[in-house]
Amino acid sequence: MLLFVFDTGIGIYLFILGFCLSMLIVFNGIYHLPNAKIEINGNEMLISGYNTAFDLRLVKQIEIQQNRILVKNINDSVVRIDNLNLDKDWADRVSNYIISYAPQLSIATATDSNVAVLISNI
Image (cartoon, rainbow, N blue to C red; front, side):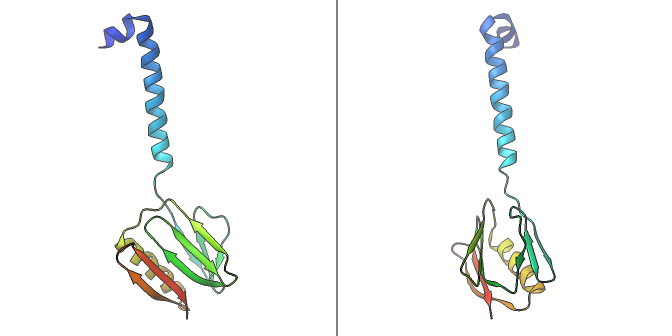
């Protein structure tokens, strides 16, 4: 196989092109891995992928779904954090983490079908 690739003139170009395309696919896959980090300090919640911290006193609703988190404030503006991969267990962990640091929030609805947990102000 290697003799064919390096013996013919076009084989080396196909090898280089194939190698470059495969590296591009690998790096694209690494770049699009689902990831997020939620950090709560006092009344501010910071989610990776969004540059501004949320004031938890102004949050009306937090909706945790399988592939995204929606944060709605009292002015009905919505911030959407995408590219997540949450199952029911991780959605429960995220909601419990938020509730442990923000006692003014409570679980309003938990549905098993689409892994959504709604957290709204009391």
